[in-house]
Length: 440
Image 1 (spheres, one colour):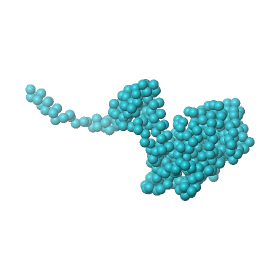
Image 2: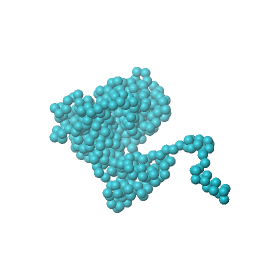
Image 3: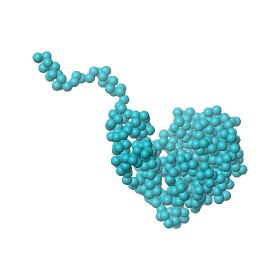
Image 4: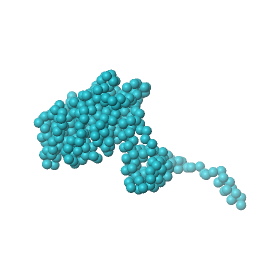
């Protein structure tokens, strides 16, 4: 009896102390959010907005399974105040994707916003690309920089080889591909750099570049495009597109090459046959300056040297609309991937415009104006400016409304979810952050 009492008393005092090996084992066992119980993760997901839910579903297989669970689906149904029949007709991912796109559209067109601005380079920043929460900027000085949009920190920097100027570039999760002088150059994210051999990689002066693994396409001043294999580093094709210099390029999912020119014409070519497929005509004899292609709608958008925006349906090759949306050159025209509603336009007048993709109507014009505050980031001082929407009665003639100093020319822009990055003829980079007021 005494033994049992002693044993019971020992148990009351608590468990025996952990041994050193048990403590070390616990320390070595990683604890992160992926180790949480699925019910706990589902509860956390319930506090997120619809767009963040879609992003979380892409993290891993476990989270994707939780995302598709019935309990989360029922929560979303209650939150969005939708009927069960609506939810059973479509996958949850598709429903939330539509909600996210609606939030994005309303945020750009009528939401409140502010603009964060910082010095990105020593001179003009002429190009920018944004993907996966990362931003790449360059063209102007001899440096290409990779930024984190969360911290405004420059996380990578690459110098140009020798004295070659950077002309154009694009990037993905593993590399940056650049048109440097008359050469192609690849910077791997692991730090390695590869320059194409001078005999195979050299060409008549290039003006623009795009790539679709494994091919990189360079538009040249002689009116031809040169197609390179990025792994063999050899020029595989030369396709005559125009009799005048090429100004911009697009590559679509069918691997068709679309090129704009200084004459205002746009040519479509099929690399598989090394032949032109079609020619699209604009009313602007001073040239096409920028293009973008929307794969979800098969629409091609272009901006001209005299402020016109155009839209063609590539399935029928027909011009759907054309409008003069700016008094001067349009340098950049872009949209968010999978968004078929809103088009962002920027140019020499420094006004950021939003167009309806379906009819070309200007739905809003914005600029960053009054300085609100400054704060320090890992890369220097950040200026936060108040966002202002211009009156809608005259969206082209803005010279009397806004001082030139408040609207530096937009040289390039990139569109993300409820945010836009612009580069300017100064050495500044601007991040525009928009908020939607949609109730789900």
